Length: 248
Length: 285
Image 1 (spheres, chains in turn purple, green):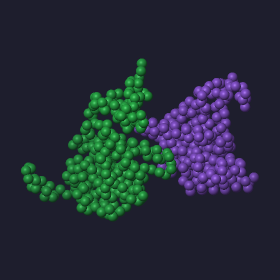
Image 2 (cartoon, helix red, strand yellow):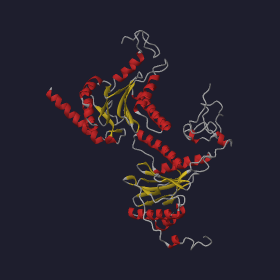
Image 3 (cartoon, chains in turn brown, green):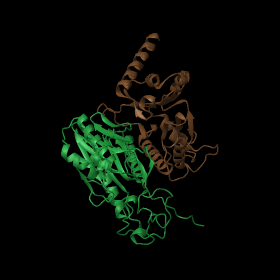
Image 4 (tube, chains in turn green, purple):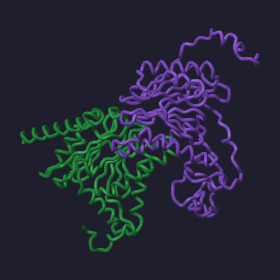
């Protein structure tokens, strides 16, 4: 890192001479080292998938959640520092509740994404705070249809058709670009996401997959993918991976 | 220039009350007294007493009378769970103003709520419960409020509001299934609450309750229970002018909650008592 030792990487309130804020760059690194998180917008909803490395054989299955509902119509999957992610999720829940109280309607996706981005951005403005080491994929289904947003540690927020963050993001993004997203439904989407997560995971270490979606099948509510469907997707992904290994 | 303080009290709703009514916290207003008996230093805002109301200054009158109201709600337990019944009328005084107002609402997968009295207050109560249900949904741990918890919560909310001299003008009936056991309770506008095997609010207390006492059994079948409610609703329609012939029945069973489509009942107006109503009422005309 060019920033190390130059004195410009100690605070978020100082730019380096070439225009970088190193602390937010480092926060992005924390995200880049985490398990892959994938999100795609299908023609009837959004699918989020998280690759969670199993840190110990003694770990209880399903612990360390990374995909959370923040309202009935919205949910977040976080990559990077899990504890930071929970803060962002809590904030998203609060924003959703306060919007509902004030306007009497569910918070629109772009508003929620905007407010979350502003919240995250606040932590990169003052010398005494540390930016969040978390990127959040926000899945919403509102009157404007299914949407996917990415909020980065720097406070930048983007809307995507499909994207990935974490260790395997490059390969995952390439895979997503190959999909015809407007032609596949979420039922097929979970299979594709499972396949991508398995193919970008190249180490021998075991991992647990967390799948969540919001679509017609889930009643337009952000839910974890039902266990049977998730297991079927995982089986299919493993079979597909074995097939492509045979070809190699 | 300092901005004019407006109400953000969740109890009153945003912007619906002027500063003289609003509870604003000491953190936003410098002229507010530090914690006192009416205004404790802990607990959430809806549960604090409006200082101006407590001081007896500028008493509000607009909550003294309800405006758009619903009449009785009936509820009985039966073999498979609980049944609630109500008509769909929102009366504006004696005017039959809103004829399709649904007064039975699903709270969660095991609870229904029926309401009489001020219907705007009922809608407010629904937003309170909806917020709690969404909180449960986000926790995503498979837990939700039990009927008894909903009942306990509502009794606290209504009692608290009457203590502020700003009651939620409702008679509520909470029905549900808790561990396979039917639950049926009612909460009044001043916080009076009780559970029973059969319940009726308002005029229904006089009109439907005697029928329930005579015919209700906890082991009734669904058909028998529906029949009993139909008969009770019919009596309410005959004798309570705030009732229309458009009813709904809500059920809570092991399968979950269902609120029926609105339906009408067969009526018979040829009874002698109806033809000559004065015959058996001495001193009337």
